[in-house]
Image (cartoon, rainbow, N blue to C red):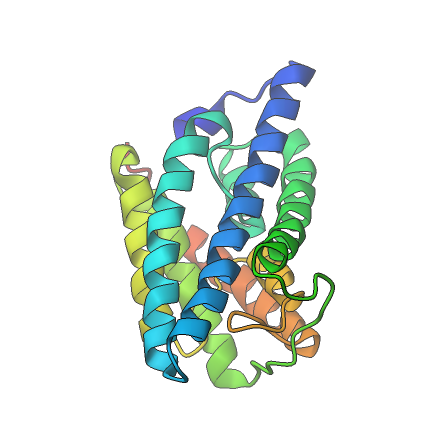
Length: 227
């Protein structure tokens, strides 16, 4: 992804294309995450482990495909922390950071609403699922740390598969089920379904995700660039 992002463009049309790719990609990612959570919960008959397994499988597959599709266009960040650390490393133009983040946040919310529309549930809603406390915050920091390290250290041609597999694993080895993404956290606030998070729990998750991303950036600098 670094090569795709390193060429900061002065072409407004190209910048718009990249920002639109981030919005659409994040929208589709949240649709996958929330939609598969709804479907999994409906079909699992109250078995939370089975619902999470279905949610995980759909997320792994969807994330891999979306990175492959949008990676050559925008870098397929779909995540404000990824955009932030990429900007610090010089892989993303500073002029694109805020447009990327805005597109990701808007896409995440629209993705939640699209999932609701497909499953015929109330479009506008907020989650009541509390996800708070030191263990949850630590889990989000760990999940995001691992995600950023994977992005920066895995050979560029394998990033899509590695990121998808890491997130799938982190759904199970972290107490928070690995949001690892402030945009996804925001989008999931707007769904009172299997994948939701209560609004009061969002700030703690976002701070932890940013902290994990910054720590991963420092560690990646110690290792040097993969290329």
